[in-house]
Amino acid sequence: MIYLAAIYLFFSALRLLVLLTNAIWKPYLKPVTYVGTKTVSLLIPARNEEKTLQQLLPVLQQQSYLPIEIIVYDDDSTDATWHVIHKFAASNNRIKGVKGEPLPNGWLGKNHACYQLAKHAKGDYLLFLDADVIPENNLIENGLDYATRNELKLLSLFPQQKMITIGEKITVPLMHQILLSLLPLPLVRWSNKPSFAAANGQFMLFEAITYQKLQPHAWVKNHPVEDIRIIRLYKKFHLQVATLLGNGTIQCRMYQSYPEAINGFAKNLLSFFGNSMFFFSFYFLATSLGWITLFWTPIPVMISGFASIILMHSIRLKLSGQKTIDMIWIPLMQLSLLHIAFKAIRSKNSTKLTWKERILNHP
Image (cartoon, rainbow, N blue to C red; front, side, top):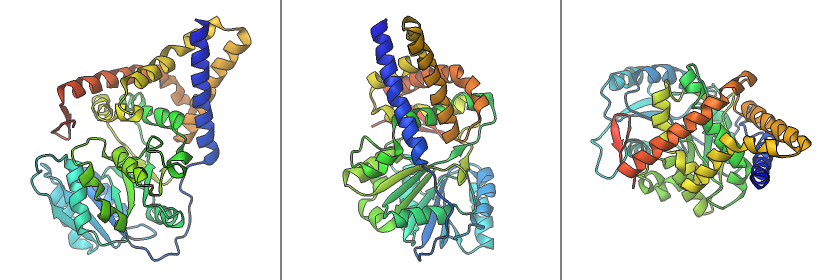
């Protein structure tokens, strides 16, 4: 057991080091005034988003740095999404609607929607936003300044997550728990290795010239985890990219129930671990049961081990904009992680996973 404890302590030390690196680097957009002349096309894929668009579009019209156009793609919605788009477009000539085409064979809905949106865009930068995000008024200005100042070809943000139900609180934080303790975010920008990559499709800001050359959404047309695949593609070609946390700049209520969160995370969980069940299993066992091995260590080591656990979760909560009280959900989060893993494995084996009322086929 002492050897297992040593392995657990080493793994915990690595995770703590990664968390401290992210905390010291402070991976956030800073409030600035953009003084350049680059233009932005804001592109929104929307499938059954009549409610979220009515919240999002008024906010986008109040940005401190206005996009030259806001294009919304109605991806074969069955609700009043097209009516909402048409209503806003009638009152603001910056807003344009594109009626979606039937989904071609070999494409997933969002990837095809983004591909079509880019065809209509005219800006120097293409900003893809999900319809359910809640941006602050300086989002575009801050993002454009960071991207141009650092000569980025792609900038992605992980929005701060709004969670209301218990089901959300025991699932959604898993994304930041895995990301912030396994990936030093500075290496997304400073290293060319595709393994040091993470991105979030809720905010993807592309330099338009490079995007049009690579056509990244066509490259990943049938992949359900398009954001990670795209940023790895960019790193493969040694293009400058970065991933930051959107705390204070952009928020999102990603899922609104436990089943919805389980289904959503199941489509991309294993991608965080290089699609390796071995690495995922090790991570799950270490984070769920590894603390038990501390009872076979000397008391000073045991105390230090438990203190590091508390410190890791405290740093993670701080970085992701959560409160300390949210630490009470950690045991249930680990059970949710196991549930997500079972869902992901079953979906992978059956090659079927439903999302937005469509079946996602894994390539």
